[in-house]
Length: 124
Image (cartoon, rainbow, N blue to C red):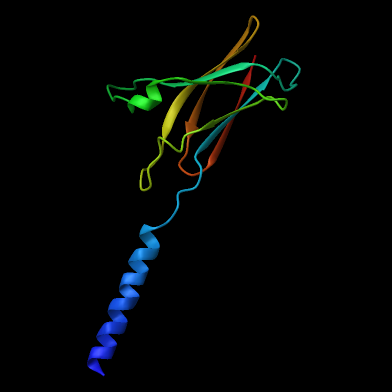
C-alpha cells in the first residue's frame, strides 16, 4: 500500500513537471498600421523597426538589426519576433518605428510584448 502511494505520487509529480516544461510558445508579433493625414490606411509604405541603446544597456544583437517590410492592402506591416523571444523572458523589446512612402515620413515607438500581437499606429 505504501509503495503504491509513493509510485502514484511520483507519477503525478513527473506528469505535472512534463506538462509545464513542454508548453509551446505563442507568436510574438508587432503590427504597425500606417495612416495618412486623412486617417486612411496606406498600402505600399516601407516600415522599419529597429532597437536602440537605452541607458547603457546593450539590446540583443538581433534586435539592433532592423527589420523592414512593406504595408499590405490594409495598411499593415507585420513583424514576427518568435526568433527573439524565449519562454520565461519578461518583455521582448522597445523598438523605434520608421515609416515612409514617397516624401512622407512618420515615426513612433512600439513595446513588443511576449506571446502577444502588439499594435501601434504611425501617421505619414
